[in-house]
Image 1: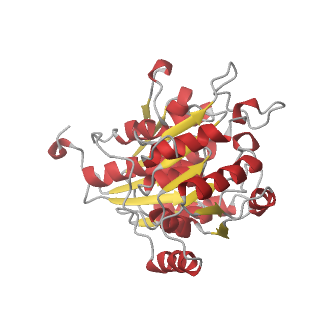
Image 2: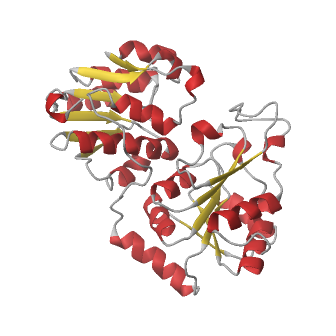
Length: 349
């Protein structure tokens, strides 16, 4: 639909509370809306941990902190009611629920927005959520759309069209960039390869010993420095990698510092995690080690990036626990070959 025919929309609410990877996968949709409706205010409702990241996104007018992470229907309604009253004062023309949960759908509906867009029941995490939408985006199962493409389809609702790539021009604070540059400079490191051994699910973890072996092989055969990255709560995973023999720099980062570190690096190796998708959004090449999640749905949203994955009868099960963990039993040599290929290096190295 031509821009001149798009209904007059002055204020938009995006509801995407978390997680990091899901927020990253929503950014192209937000960028599409911003490009399509440049005069509209775009507000984003998220949780406290992700607010600093969303504040760096071009086109986001205001970031709201939901404070609903630990809220349940049996909790006191006061925080929920305070949030709703504040949102209703904004008089949104259109609200998008990219979360697909019952609580996010309710927030979008009672925000006072004239129209509420969300996914059809078959695409929501909680099917009842779809009953709160006035407009729904649907997809046939055989389409096999990436999460980014699903979100873009939802963003088409006001008449916008596709055409947004995966790289987002995040406005990272200079302080975060300087801190990362200083830590690398102190160790004499330039343009490292990042290894991110953590993951939100235990079934997405590649063994720590494998990461340690990979780090050694990159350093010895490619002569490229390696940095282990991790966030809050992942200290134990990094310690396992170091105890397994990895002699590399490691330091914790905030989300914004990790984004800055991605910009200073030549490649990231990680599982299906938020940091992997953040690297994609920053334009950093990646090698993804994937187990229980489907490549077509959750793989890196960049054509040049490489996924290493075992194809098994139980592939793409999306289980968060497993008795066997066979899908992540991937040889180091296979990942190392992917690293060389992504970097454009000779196979014999």
